Image (cartoon, rainbow, N blue to C red; front, top):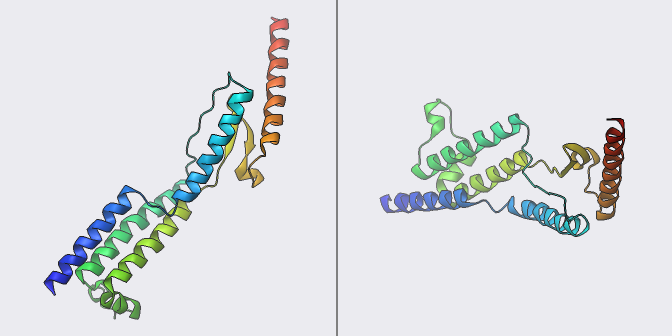
Length: 177
């Protein structure tokens, strides 16, 4: 029995190390948006060689970040309790629910379920779906507001219009001074 607990503890620590190294469930969405960003960047550099393009993560609202952080810590606590075999419900003077009993009999499956289910919720909390485009600190496109990415043709048209307006505004200010 001690050998089984030690094995489960090692397995749990290994899975936590793998989780700290990177969670793959949110990677696909991130790679897709990064790929779109890279494609747009390459096309825009070809059309506008003097433009500077920067990409950054758009953080979710603080409440969602705090919920995700809490879930991350809570997940580790629950996995630790499953591995060690401690019944937190006994400390509260409450009978353990059936799912806890099942988890004690199927520790590996229970730990995996807690880990993946929690990661799914954490990723949902941290995902904004943002693809925000600004030109000279002026917003020109917001995926959060529009609900979709601009096509490359739309983006080029928007940038052309904005640059023409900026040139027009700059020539007016130079003529007045």
